[in-house]
Amino acid sequence: MAIRKILTVPNPILKQVSKPVKTVTDDTRALMDDMLETMYNAPGIGLAAVQIGVPLNVIVMDLAREDEDPQPRYFINPEILESVDDTKPYQEGCLSVPDVYDDVERPERVKLTYLDYNGERITEWAEGLYAVCIQHEMDHLKGIVFIDYLSRLKRARAVKKVLKGDKLRAAG
Ligand code: GNR
Ligand code: NI
Image (cartoon, rainbow, N blue to C red; front, side, top):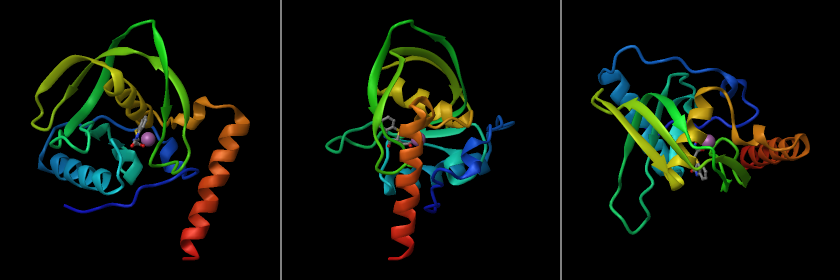
């Protein structure tokens, strides 16, 4: 397992549309292992493969609180089958947009289908933080980052803030 570098905006790779995984293999599992380690190290609650520069439809997530045992979740080729009409705002953040947080409105519950770590199909409803996070991650697979839902001014400020943070880190 290895910790990989997380790409940040405005890296154009984050705008790429990810491709489906043809077959779930040990390579897919090795990628997911690296993603999980990278996510825990960040730390974050979800990560899409494109955020480490691999444009495949692969997501990892762990919504367990710090006082709970880890609950790693793996999603390959996820699809949303149904969404309720009710939406709810939630203050989102993103490892690709460090230190920026803002409200995003999304459907409160979504029915999704995906392949798990072993390539088995799971179909279930997601709600609460799970619904927020899976929609945020599935946006990454389409090249969408949460700041794309904000006003142009807020988006420009967010990108500027990230570039400034990168510059400060580079200078040590
Ligand atoms: O760690 C993360 N926290 C978070 C908080 C609110 C809504 C979505 C997220 S996902 C984010 C990790 C990330 O950037 N995943 O793509
Ligand atoms: Ni994100």
